[in-house]
Amino acid sequence: MTAPPILLLPRPLPRSPEASPMPTQHDQSTAPVDPDTAALELQTAVDQLTKPTLHRLNRGEPAPGSDEYQQIVDDRDLEQASWNRLSEAYRLRDTQVARDALDVIDLIAHRRAARTVPTVEVPPLLLQLQHAIPNGSDTGHSSPGTGAARSPLALAALDVVSEIATATGFRGPASSPNLAAHLAAWCVKVCGDETQVVQAAQLAAGWPDRARAVLDPVKHWTMPGACPDCGNRTAYVHRDGEVVRVPAIALDTTSRPTTARCLRCPARWAGEAQLQQLNRVLNEEAGA
Image (cartoon, rainbow, N blue to C red; front, side):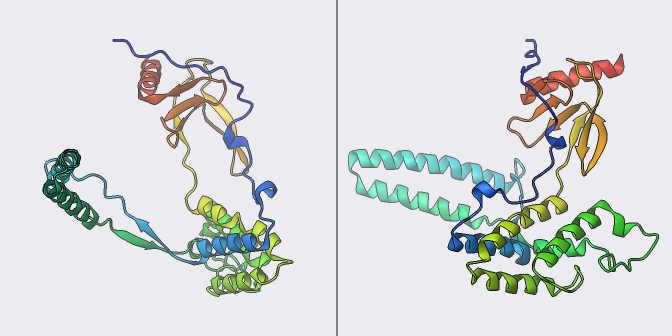
């Protein structure tokens, strides 16, 4: 059986999405206009910046053959059989069989809930940003020669924290541990002022997303080789304020299904079969 042909979608591709600057201000069309709604959005944004969160660890599926794996399989089979018995009991109006089936279903539900997923406490976004700022870099007294103060992460973190400090009237250094308490107090004060809360909510709405973008930047995956459709090997994109050269075929692992596309033409490959075929073409080209 031959692999499916490469899918080419003839759609305009004026620029790579990476070349489009990310908006830094809240969309005015969706900005809150009601003071109560604005206060709620402002409080939500500040909470995301100043309060820790619980992150559930992904343990994944237990290994096949393990006792835990077999217990899960047995429970699924038993639960399905119990639902079938319950349906039959209702049809026959057999109260005792129905109660027994419900007891088994309830037992399995409790057993499933008992398989707790471990969690860890993640520090507040603002604190994570401050930890990314080298000592002294926010006061102009960082140690020379290390280059840490001028790293992309440090500069981006300092930019966001400095904006928050300036907007809220904080007079200390950006790395000060007092900034979080000041931000929370500023939020309480502004939420009680209907003349300021709407503008403040619009200003603060983008801070949590900007913080996450700094701490967990988007990973850019590519596939080396020439595009089978247009033959180009590289493309130029805007990234972090600079024009950089990258491989022409970009891989998007966040889409469902995973897709690859050429940054120089409309060529596009979606799904495992087409990506495997693309990979074979690129490997053949590399070995030629």
